[in-house]
Amino acid sequence: MTDLHRLSIRELAEGLSQAKFSSRELTEHYLQRIAKIDPLVKSYVTVTPEQALAEADAADAALKAGNATALTGIPLAHKDIFCTKGIKTTAGSKILDNFISPYDATVVEKTKAAGLVTLGKVNMDEFAMGSTSESSYVGATSNPWALDHVPGGSSGGSAAAVAADLAPFATGTDTGGSIRQPASFCGLTGLKPTYGRVSRFGIIAYASSLDQAGPMARSAEDCAYLMNVIAGHDAKDSTSVKKEVDDYVTNLSNTSVKGLRIGIPKQYFNVVGLDADVKARVEESLKKLEEMGATLVEIDLNMTEAYVPTYYLIAPAEASSNLSRYDGVRYGHRCENPADLMDLYKRSRSEGFGPEVQRRILIGTYALSAGYYDAYYVKAQKVRRLIQQDFLKAFENVDVIAAPSAPTTAYKIGANLSPTEMYLGDIYTLAVNLAGLPAINAPVGFDKDSLPVGLQLIGNYWSESQLLSIVHQYQQNTDWHTKRAAIAEENA
Ligand code: GLN
Image (tube, rainbow, N blue to C red; front, side):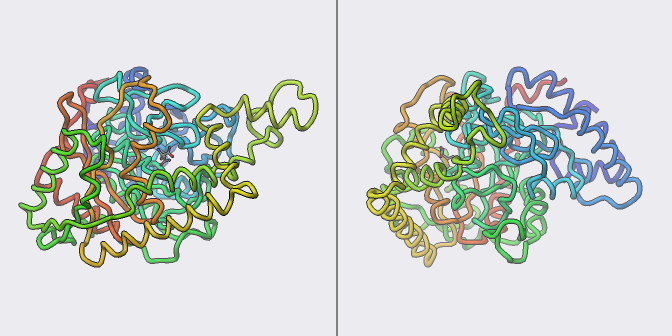
């Protein structure tokens, strides 16, 4: 079969359980595609063919023996931020270039237990700091829709791999938009769950109070399958929540779009820098939802201007603390011939961290230092609470809130935006993490250059089923999520 990469997760599961093809055939098919097409896209940092084929054979045995799960034998890619036992985990940083984790992240453990096959690890911005995936020390990844454009970030490798059909779905993490924005730039569906829904154990920490893992795939249905595997409480992550996990697949048709109240924040559609095509496509998608029975309700989110400054204090503050562990002593990059301990620390860190990471460590350390702590960090925490309250107030009158996922479509590789320009591009995604809410990106069309545009729907706490269900129904009535980049049409 030459078109296995065109099948949805449900179709793959059916095909495997009915023995129309084996996991080995499917895995080989993807490995061949990666070998042929990924040199152009550069989405993978590490491909693991031997392990993948061994897992595929084990999956085929389980399928034969009748003890397979719903997803046994389906391949996936993991963002290179998830610790994988025996496979290098770099988080896109030179400082972790030689790091092989002695254990699996809980998310990885769960995908293995479900019988999923790991194809490899995919590229990302260094320590998930960025919006283009260009800050990775291994170099940039291309957007499958236009190879001279970025796939977004920080989960850009995950997005590019799925959009080029080099993996049927992938894991990502989202600290301030890193699942939703690359999904938007690459025409995919991506879900950032409620903080605490998915275990952070074994995910290289960026900003611990904001980090959350989630699925990236073509459709809401595909995302639901992966959510069923990765969601849930984990004793190894004290911030993961003991709360029953929905069956996201069964729930896909449970939310009625008829009568759904969708909040349209006044402030969001007047943002300077909101691209006219993005605005038009998002508005068209809302019109479609209206036709399907939803009511659009104008709402106020008065704290909009505070999102970027608040996030860019709290995230670097937490990052500066989390990244203090990389000191060249126990693991990771170590400088040559250190003169003394201080020299070892200084040079290992200066050589190991790229410029964006260094910038954030400086900002974060400054904001946390005695004398500035109250003025910056404590104040940002207070504003964070106000941002959360703003959302909670809005949810008294609406079921979900609509927004673009990003003010623009994908940037050109090497556009070299200033840090301020880059940070402003995160305006629509950051508040969701500050408030700990779930949100989803769905592809809703293209701009004048044929680059994908995404709609973001933000839900109240624990509304993952609702978000997936709304997007699923939108996708039953539209075909944006089925569009494929030319490079994905190529056969290996
Ligand atoms: N672009 C944002 C940042 O650079 C968000 C990244 C993320 O979600 N990991 O911090």
